[in-house]
Amino acid sequence: MMLYVWFVIAGAFAGVCAGLFGVGGGMIIVPALVWIFAANNFPPEVVTHLAIGTSLATIVVTSISSMTAHNKRGGVRWDVWRKMGLGLIIGSLIGAGVAESIDGKALQAIIGVGALLVAINMLFFANKEQLGKPLPSTGMQFGAGTGIGLASSIFGIGGGSLTVPFLNWAGLTMKQSVGTAAACGLPIAVAGALGFAWFGQNVENLPEGTIGFVHISGFLCISVVSFIMAKVGAKLAYKLPAATLKRAFGVLLLFAGGQLLLSGLGVL
Image (cartoon, rainbow, N blue to C red; front, side):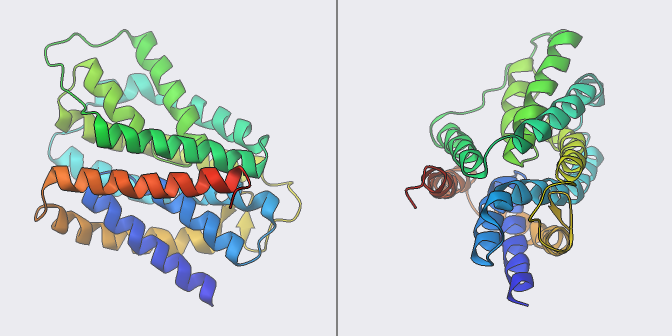
């Protein structure tokens, strides 16, 4: 029973963070699930992969909600999304296959480094708009989608922390960058979750109630609760300074990334 309580707590925390900080909850959900699964004595060799696959499955639900909200406000550039979409799907599937072949502890360390890099970017660098700049070629947009999908699938995230800077650089406004990144999270999450479910189907030592590397009850609990609590976080976001929120999330990622890195290296 406590496993489900922890799922609800993780979903609530991830949802509030997603609403507060304007990013998907993957960077929160993955470390939380690694801790939850390890604390409940899941086989250590599958803990990290199970956390990533389950995180991607939850992002399917939250990305649909976020994409719909941004689209209503005209924030999604569907022309860019279409050019990046196939690359996002291909990259995410490849990323799932790559992650499946990496040792769980090494994968934790890789995700920890990714979280630390995102934290440093949020704390010390600003995404500047470059308006009036012509869009990159279709091939470059496809290539960027492939790279973003691959990295996002390995990290178990929706890719917003990677997509927004690219779209800013490509000449989109911040509003369009965030909205289009939210839409890009859907193909990443769907392809990534399916990839982890597929590549994990014949893995030994998986606990009951899983489809490959996706924990079904964890997916359901976290999705429902994070969907609800994201609205709470969004309301709080309008009451707090944006710069303060960005720094707070950066510090949070420093702790989460540092913990994963140290755990992956065997220090913790």
